[in-house]
Picture 1: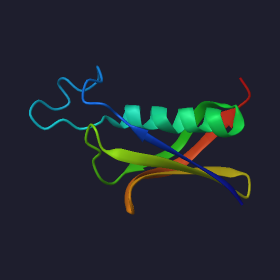
Picture 2: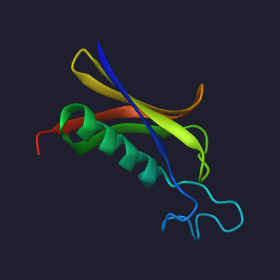
Picture 3: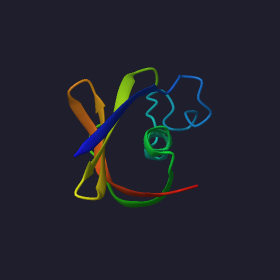
Length: 98
């Protein structure tokens, strides 16, 4: 099994946040998945071509530190997004050469 970890933070000024949700901003799932895509590019030089499965289990707020953990388990790419020890999202992706 090979693995890769990359930290990220979505700033409070990110253009996705107004309206998601006023007074209680949350980072949208699509922005969290973009962090997965960026980690895949950094790790393997691949682009994200398919999200086979994604489950969001806890919210991420602007300005919080989080990390993407990618792992290749028997040829399947798995991801987790965590804030410290807390799982925020998990799933499976497919990548391909650019």
